[in-house]
Image (tube, rainbow, N blue to C red; front, side, top):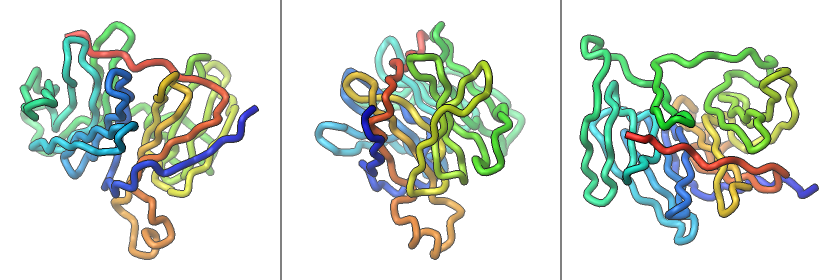
Length: 227
């Protein structure tokens, strides 16, 4: 079995990185920085980062079958054209709640884009702290990033048994996805908001993007929005 390796591939200092999505066509990782109101795309080959700044906190991004991307911005479902950096509103919810916003979003196998203001919370062991973003591997097992736990864990969704733990050098791990040439790599986002100067000094890579290799399992491609 290969040895697990953890590497910070992008020390981008995201305030709160979230929603990593692998785009196979461009060998790129999409992700958002929620409070910074940015959708980002990291080129894994050229190592460059492109950003689009939007007008409200952006909580998730997803691929779109017809081209471009979709994102949850504030309380709006939006289409995002990367070429001209334009944003078009597809739908708006909770118009009467000024301080509300989407918290996360994912596309299901049927191509529907789901978003919610509150997550369902799974009960984990105390040391894991708060379960955050998740993904599924090719064997149907669940990977969960543990916020304030500094790790991702692999769970059997049928039994709840923990199968694997990978620790990272940062506490505020927020989400994870599989990517790379054959989806054998895992990418993990994290946050730095809320950390004091001492904590940032101890964890200089907080807010970066991490790559985990050698997990011994592959992921599946992300589902694109069908609309």
